[in-house]
Every structure is written in structure tokens, then in C-alpha cells.
Length: 139
Image (cartoon, rainbow, N blue to C red):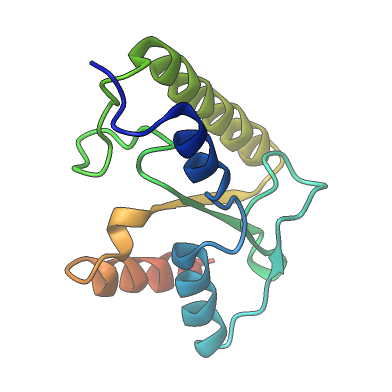
């Protein structure tokens, strides 16, 4: 199967995908700020440069895209029909890095929370935020 876009168009489209300050990240940040939580962003001193660092709670939050992080069982994680092997290797590498960074953070005493973009959709967002609050209030 061939791509519906030219190589140049596909390359341009992929280059426009952001790694920081994504809409899902901003949603989580605004929620936390409104609830009185203060945090740092993308701390380079920590493994994986977590999206949100709540030092007071020794907690980090990764806000992951379902596609890029291979969110199993999610309708937003669809394996591309072109360059399938390349994509499987790429996504598998992302998942390995996620697991390695999670383990490193946990061994140094950090609580790690992962939120996937599908958990911030209309039908899930209230549950996601309530779960987040309950996890943080336990700390």
C-alpha cells in the first residue's frame, strides 16, 4: 500500500507534530494549576524529561500520545499501513524508553503517572482528573 501523501508532504506533516506544550499537556497543566498544584515542566535532570514534575509530591506525570507510545487496546493507536516495520520498531523503542525511565524514576523514589491522550477525551476526562486528584491526595 502506498501513502496518500507525497514524501515531502508526509515529511512536512510529521515535522509539525510537537513534543512539548501539546493540547493534552496543557489540559492537564491547567487542571492542576486550577486545583492549586504547582509544578515544573520537562525537567532535564530527571529520566525521560517528564512533562510535569510535582516536586512537593515527589510525583511526575507523562502525558503520552496514544499513537506514539503504542497505547494497547486504544482506538487511537493504529499501526500505519505503510512502512509498517519501521513504525513498529519506532513505537516499540518508545515503549522501551518509557519503561526504562519509569523504572529509573521509581527506584529513586518518584511516583510516576502516565496519562494518555484518549483519557482526556470528553467521555473520559472527568474520571481521569478525579483519579489524578485521588492519587495526589494520597501522597
